[in-house]
Amino acid sequence: MASLRDIKGRINSTKKTKQITKAMEMVSASKLNRAEQNAKSFVPYSDKIQEVVANIASGTSSRHPMLQNREVKRTGYLVITSDRGLAGAYNSSILRKVYSQIHNHHTSAEEYKIITLGRIGRDFFRKRNMPVDMDITGLADQPNFADIKDIAQDTVQLFIDEEIDELYLYYNHYVSAMTQEVTERKVLPLTDFSDSKKVSSSSYEYEPGEDEILEVLLPQYAESLIYGALLDGKASEHAARMTAMKSATDNAEDLIGDLTLSYNRARQAAITQEITEIVGGAAALE
Image (cartoon, rainbow, N blue to C red):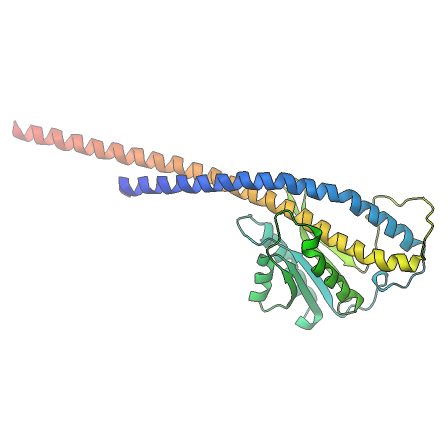
């Protein structure tokens, strides 16, 4: 049995760990509130640009490359993870799905490109000698579009330049503070607007022509999908970390209770032993 000093030391160290995890839980809860607001406030813009693009694209014969399916020779995977751990299964669930998709659909590294937002994802693929063509780390907890503008534009340009023939986006969709869903979304080519909430019946007048408008609007729309997924992923990250830290705090509380019980039992046994020795010594003197 561990000594009283050892048990007391474990109780003290667990209490300190509990203080840390509790503080991290509160910080994540605070960040979650703002991240959730950011994600929700971006939805009206995302819905509107999708509505406009869907209306223009459905009524034009434009041959813009972002609207055309072509033979798939190389696939792009844009993966959104966090820079730090301690977020439960937030990162592992995404990476497991992406790795499975690549493993099942490709036989050579020449058949795909990987773009990562977040250190965890970048390090995961590099350790497995998988090609990470572009990456960005150190994103703020509440990122602005300017933070990812370059990598979003470069990713879209890969498709326009036919370096990739399709682009899939992987991230954790925020459902609630307790639930996040791993989401796969085909970003390019832009051929499916079935998830558009509504298609406006309004009549549009174009100045300049439709092709010129699509030339500007389509890349912006694709970039908005990436940024919207990042905001959604950040809300999920903070929620997952808050939940993980709450679980860690609860586990620490349970461990402290078990150790305190063991400490009291050991202390009671030691006191009983001392009393027995005192009584035995007194009896021996009689």
